[in-house]
Image 1 (cartoon, rainbow, N blue to C red):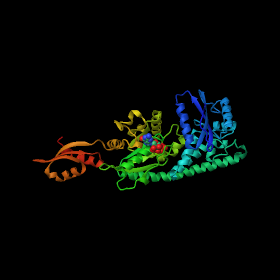
Image 2: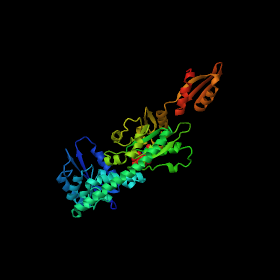
Image 3: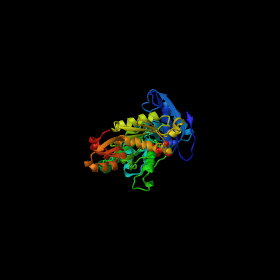
Image 4: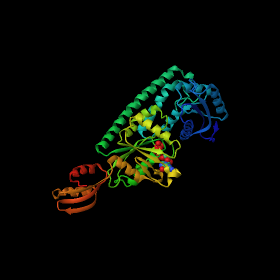
Length: 439
Ligand SMILES: Nc1nc2c(ncn2[C@@H]2O[C@H](COP(=O)(O)OP(=O)(O)OP(=O)(O)O)[C@@H](O)[C@H]2O)c(=O)[nH]1
Ligand SMILES: [Mg+2]
């Protein structure tokens, strides 16, 4: 048990953690639950834990513990009880009856954060759909998990409302679920059309993925600052929100990055992942997340300064596998390395497709860009050519496309030493001149 700072203005919550002997990182889970509370503007005032082999079927925790929670809630004037895991609808209902306060679980908190952050029509609909799907099986125990989200009375089970009202609510929710799905389908079609036109342009796409708060949006913004699209002088309106909070980004943003002298690529930023991301949310956000599934290259951003970063990488990989994006080639950016004394002075450090960097401190953006380009277009190739004088126009095209280090007019043609930088167009020319290669 431990006490936290009290905050008079916010809703006050007792956190309940159940430690199961299943090897999962219990402490990390609880710390993350506190961060989720902060993102919801809830003040955790006390934490109660229990260690069990398996959750209690009816109450999740043992009945003795339930009394302890109830007592603590009364003593500390708590408004809510929050559990560290997903509760079944009946567990939430029973706990609400026993304790007499709204019961939230991890899923409800994540849904609430998503609801408060959603901006675009698509994100709003996706969140609404996930909430309704979560709410439907919980309707009969109103005042439980969704109460803060307008789904219930916030007090004891409302038996007086009657079965008829319940049935009406159910029908209303089912109807709204169908409507949301339909509207999302229409938006999805537009998204697919946009993606098709991007694909048709043959400009490859890179998707930022990773745990929430790792620095994905910071990388997108830094890329825009460094190499914003040529035509745009004011890039401020193209930037996305980057902030030190969970799930700052919910909408998908795709930006074209044009590095001078290099072929362009698209970079997309989307919602971050979290351990035990509710399945309703993954399903609801599938079309947004499809930007990642359709990418040519994934750029996984890791907050390497977080002691649990390996855990976060595992969650990211699991989520990508679930989405069907597990096999897409990937660069791993170990971001926020400026916070680690052993790396801070040597950044960036590139090892194969891994880079230690700090986008927030503007360390490693060029190296990251090179890594992206070499993955998308291959490494620069230097060759020596002897172009017959009859192919004079080729000499001109080669000088336009590549970096020519040396030109000599010899007896049987023009000798050139040229380096082709990565680009799809260069690739075609390289194949064309291959028969004139002498080194
Ligand atoms: N010290 C340090 N902080 C960083 C670095 N990169 C990003 N940050 C900070 O980390 C926080 C989260 O960054 P975001 O870019 O919003 O993270 P995100 O991955 O987009 O997060 P979500 O959209 O919430 O999933 C912000 O406060 C950034 O300023 C870095 O290299 N070093
Ligand atoms: Mg973000």
